[in-house]
Image (spheres, rainbow, N blue to C red):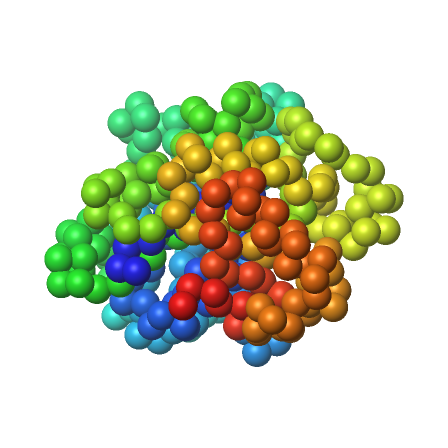
Length: 334
């Protein structure tokens, strides 16, 4: 590594949680920092059990990994404790930066009642109103919530001290780059923050010169939830026929589908400064790939697809997902 940023290439749902959990196990990560907020769920499958995580980093599978929620993140306190119980992470492993802001119940009520929600289709968690309050500098912070006290830390200091000591750090971005408030070109059908690699590092308090790799995560087809354009979108019926129909793990919302977009993949790799790429759900497009752990075991058409992605984006595809389990990965980094 030692410092890698995970960024989603499209509108989310790319499989960032799977990649983060794999790297935690494979590379024996020292730190994993989750950025963003509760509106994005990262799905982790391990030994047949599914975890849909809105707060706890996907790297929780490795009992040695220190888990942090970034200073720039927004905390939904009830959901945080629900996931702590689900994942059984100990207080000594889990930390929340004292400067992270809090999503209150009033924010959720405002979100669900807003015209923005009705027009754009937000998750209703209250993230947008909570961010508004933070910008006005009237938000509650993690340090203001008594029940969070056992988890409070200076996450920025921890991570930077870790990097000084040569420890491995994964910055787990949430949502997809095409939902960036500033850079996606999809405004107003976007989220309330920047979701690019630079912003992920910024939320975690890691300077750009400390990042060694930007790992952009693609999925073999594209999905998005909520309103807004989706180039090449196919019908629900066609998505069902192709096996591309999905439901969001965290909210239960149906995902819209489209074929892989090579031009968009190239552009977003460039803007994010991607040095590596992961491709998930290759087995959905090429079912004979399912469960493969070696590149040589892939059929020719799957290899041709990977080569085309590499040729058109200029980024090596180093991790290939071939099934739902965290370890269903072809690792080409060596």
